[in-house]
Length: 194
Length: 379
Image (cartoon, rainbow over all chains, first blue to last red; front, side, top):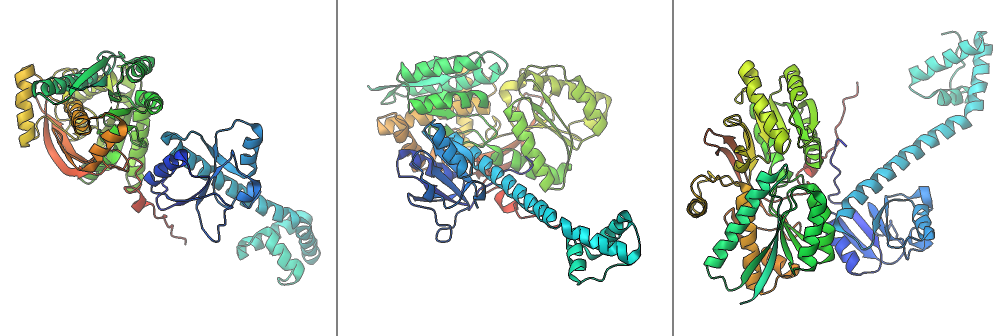
């Protein structure tokens, strides 16, 4: 870890009923420079924006967190006393990337924030990468159409046409797929020999 | 007269026995002075000596908290043992007094921290050293969380400052074969060496650097000093005579500090132990912790953590370390920073100081301002 994780001025939403445990959790978060909002009702990020959510996984119900699993828009930490697989599954389903066991001990809080944040950013990066790959997959037939047009225009074989398409994409600073779309849609003239 | 029992948990033998003996002597001296002064409550020490064995710390502190009615325990030196005993301290709702410099990233309601954390030792040390000695640094450390985390932070600070880590090596605490480390140093010619080793490996290293400097003046202390954040007067006697001279260490207390309270303290220590004892920040820190604890339970006439914390948080308290403010947010003491250079008399000459620095154990304020994103020029 080259940079010390830092949560100063972060806003944490704790979804839990107030009790001594949660008081301790709140104080420890405040030591880390985190502002805490405690509530026992569904999270509404539009109304009360938060950078991370810590949710009671023992009592938690689906509507508390208005998203499913890998859609969590912010990092999620599960507050868990139970060992019941169903409750652990619920926490996972809601996108928990870390766990703070109850009763809360001070030393578990900072590591949980670091883990949950890391898990969340990793998931976000994977999601973005997958979206990119899926789009490329979806556009493959169009790339093929563009290659066929180039083959016809410059009288080359498939490999030559593909090289032309790649060079054009590089010049335009676009992906191969986007140039292919432009060619097929007629926004870009079909390149002849380059 | 009401009696309160206080646990004193230090290893007086084992690899860091010199530090433990000093801590224990400081605590004992405070208890003697309290008894002599006719304090309105009696502080009865319950001593435990784990001899450097991690599992013994757990057995001893459990007995202190559960059977001996100690609510306050002054002790532990390594972070390993502190982390090990905290769950028991929490379970029995006791208060652990931790007086050693450590690597930070902890703040527990059942612990009072009067030892420095990195924004009170490493960061001011780098603030002082980088502009004066250069930014090409070699990192040596104990193969244990203190060494790892101190060097991780040192690397981060150097990256921020545009410096360079020339090499990084770790040795077990008891390893005294430092040949590879010295050979590696000779390949790099650093501006200075950060030494986060502990005990025998650190002593052997200082001795080897001294011999290296005799062969190659590029490693003389004035050209390439060895910097520690935890080397004190009590360990200089463990090192071959004279080998540490000229090297640097940070502390929140040095025996040579010229304050009136320190002068008086030194006289009393000399009267009790003879003029030969070198007072370290461990001795003074344990002494101050016992005194503060005694004052707190005297005032509250109770020794539960909430009452003691209330006393400590209420206002600054006068101690042999100076006026001590304990931050209610972190339970850490604000501490001054001193940089000392080892002299030929097994003491330190203070070469730089800063007034009390508020502890920032998670570096929330210290590094936050520097967290702006780095922008790259795109051509």
